[in-house]
Amino acid sequence: MVDWADVVIVKENIMSAKELVLKTVRKMSDKLSMEEILDELAILAAIREGEDAADAGKMVSHDEIKARASLEAVRQVLGKTPDTIAQVIHADREDR
Image (cartoon, rainbow, N blue to C red):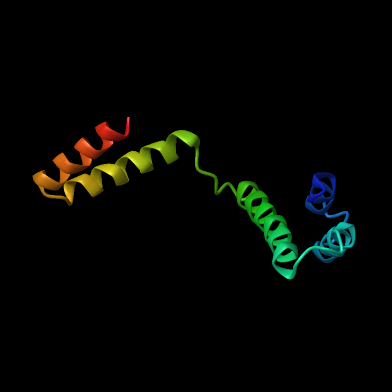
């Protein structure tokens, strides 16, 4: 439902955020619930936040995300007893 061309127009300050919201809501089906409408608007807000963060240089590379995830996995393992680690490894092997 999100019109990506409109998102770009807002980014370039041709259309205000309010105008984007109104235009988006007008395009929606009258059958949508309030929750569905709010979900769409939340998507618009998240896109805008992400673009603003990118413009401000607050991006994290894919490699950095992978490194952080690996570090968190190590932290979780180090916080467990050897028996618990063995159980996790065994359960993982059974899932494969």
